[in-house]
Amino acid sequence: MRVSIVQPRDLGKTDIDRWRALQASNPVFDSPFLSPEFTTTVGALQERVRVAVLHDGPDTVGFFPFERHPMGIGMPVAAGLTDAQGLVHAKDVEIDPHWLIKACGLAVFEFDHLAPGQPLLQAGHSRHPSPIIDLRDGFESYIETVKVNSGKTYRSTAYKSRKLQRDVGPVRHEYGIKDLAPLRTLLGWKTEQYRRTGRTDRFARPWIVKLVERLLATDNEHFGGVLDMLYVDDRPVAGHFGLRTGTTLAGWFPAYDTAYAKYSPGLIHHLAMAEKAAATGIQVIDMGRGEKEYKEKLKNGEYEVAEGRVARPSAGAGVHWMLRVPVRKARGTVLAHPMLRTTADRALKTYGRLRTTIMS
Image 1 (cartoon, rainbow, N blue to C red):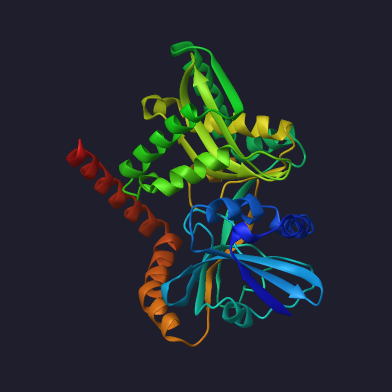
Image 2 (spheres, one colour):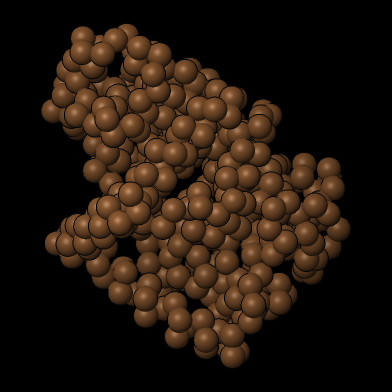
């Protein structure tokens, strides 16, 4: 087996077609974050993106997109933004992970949402659930499951939807929007949410805004950006921007106008989004790893993703261990214990309120 390292822009039509064929051959690869369009779009904005093309004799048997950082540190494409990471490869192909990262010129490869069944997966890597909305039996079947598993939430959401319409005006939902104005409204809500909860504002980085805008403009049978919004009396109150394959919608950036928070517009929106998505052929909405209350209320299944690193003996791997591993372990300890997680979340929200007050 041999490896060719290329920039995304150097992939030809034959490469893209082969990547899509490999992706379609295994359901675990059915995530837009593992699609060639995602890597090529990020690669047009970030020079550090590379793709390892794996060859076995005359056959192309895999694609491994990654970012190459100083000291041989490797990370997933658009690290920190993606909910599925790793290789797209042929079934039954044997790939030694240490051989692969060496062939890529890396000392270490770190990940936090590694897709199942990856050659990079090792015994010491931690596994985490990634909640999904499974629509394979249809939207009505999904709703019946929600009524059983989260009956109180469903009834409360239906009541708040009716109350919103009585108090404010008629509700409508638009799916597959291509205009930039609603997208910018959504990103504004998301920025406010990041600041309010003490998180880093991803959209303070111009390249991420450009990435989202370019992905919104992308739309083919295999991949596309999906923007949908919930309106009340023609005013936007909640929305979401995500990415899709032909059958999977990846949840990415949901947000709502806090002026309508008492009506739970996020839950109203998610149920409307699931119905419209199912009507377009979406079978799974992957809400992504993370302990969020709305995910627990809406999920009817889950995937599993892994977190960890693959390293080979080197100075770069040693530096990476000192800088990243203890922090990741501490973070994992906090997230694994509800009391610690709640305390940390409250501290971040307090910080966010103070920061907002100071900046206003």
